[in-house]
Image 1: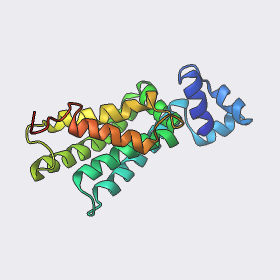
Image 2: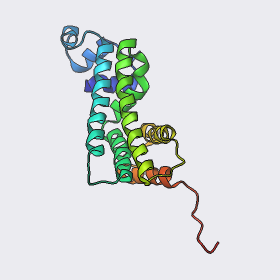
Image 3: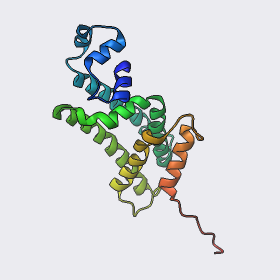
Image 4: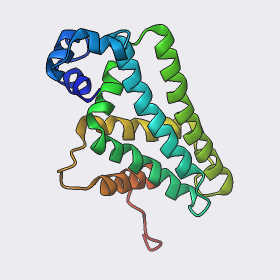
Length: 188
């Protein structure tokens, strides 16, 4: 899978052949077909591994009774960015190559992706009800904004950049939850 992920990232799914994969590994096509029925099935396994790992981590964050909702949102954003740092290739394949999954496989991945979204949305709804977040927020728009910002970071986040993954997550959550507008002092 790692060799395939590297080839898919470098050349794209369509431009990578099974022969390219087996050549990179120094094995025969028979070895490939022992593990996978097709290249598309391999892509599906890559997608499943990625999204199921995220769902498992998200559940642990949400179920933590010691943290506030804001802290949980920060932890989820951090987890997404950190995951991109640790599994950047897999993240890029997940977002870029999903279009190559057949209808049945795509439906399974979209269901799991939507589950991640709705769990985050439920958390945001709890934050609105508890008073941690503003009452005028539309939960689905807030959720999609958080996910859009965090998920797009696979395009620009660099682990060796100026800020660490946690510092980037803190900045993103501050912007998303507090905005960019300068707060006015009472004297102004």
